[in-house]
Image 1 (tube, rainbow, N blue to C red):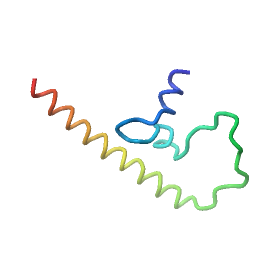
Image 2: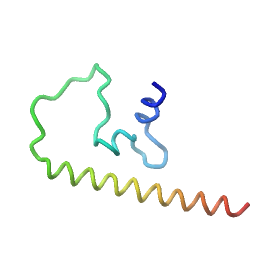
Image 3: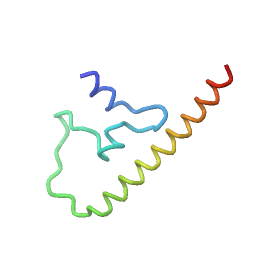
Length: 74
């Protein structure tokens, strides 16, 4: 339960949840209306996923560098 809450949380660094980064959607909790049909534009989906992951990686790398600079000042 704690892991689910952590992965579903909007993180301060990436500004999106880990579920969104990894799966391009937030998990269904059980009371949302389900969509019918299949996702037809798989190529666009993959492009969006790659872009989201690249953006998250860049933001995390920047945050890591900032943390490293702060830690090395001590």
